[in-house]
Image (cartoon, rainbow, N blue to C red; front, side, top):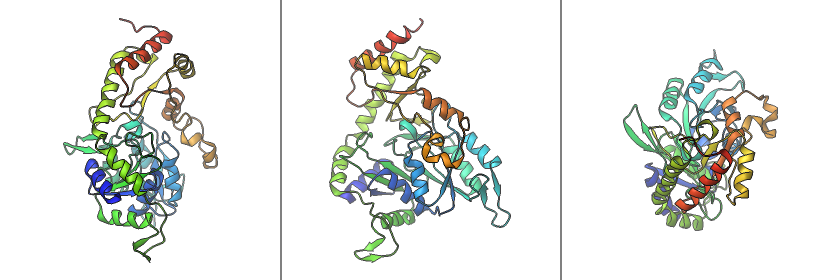
Length: 360
């Protein structure tokens, strides 16, 4: 059952291999380790993501450094990554490796996060990684079936097939959700695939034959069976989400700066895991929608660098202003495949009840 799901999910992601694991956090941790990230290394990611991204880096023995997000897509800003590599890192005179000024460790990998169902702008990130000899690993935990159009290769890619490896979560609320915890790693690299299989199963290459010390990070067969059954419906569910996003844009697209809608660039085909708007007085709108019987969510109100867990790292308020502003203004509107037009009109009417009708 596990092997069947792995084959099907690899095909969906247009990757050679998929390795089922216990959850998305283990998926990213094993992918980092299998790709060659070592204790003491520095991995660059973003402050606007769930803490699991940086937990996986720390649990692999590495340290993380952060670069801010793009103000429209909320994914890694390639220009800020460029600035970080050019100005916040130095070449170690002995090893010649790029070293972070903050962590004092060699910078070996980059983890772009495909946030809310939209793939990060991978072309410039991969170009920088090639220039500086870095491994690119995708955090695709929210991007099942999302697509990216490479301008440099004139080719369309699925999330999970672009970097050296990628991690997915099948937490129940995801576009493809299990009945409990589950995750997967995708890769086109057979060496990484083999290493991930060892890491998830106590380092076993055969029963009681332990090539390395590994972990207990296997996916349950029953979860694989559930995911395999649901996987057949994922393309239709994603198409429904995209249609719902289109309708929201029609209903809510005229508020300007008062209500900032998700931005989908021409190189992206988002699967809208989350439909996140931005509004200055978020709590007022949230309370108003709640009074109208409309549920909302808030995702990542405190960027990673401002969490208590990372106080010891010395980050300060203002270090990543785009992530801080986004975290303070983001509000997630209802988004799920079964959403119907009437419900979306109800949401729009409620928003208009607070913000006023858009100008003609």
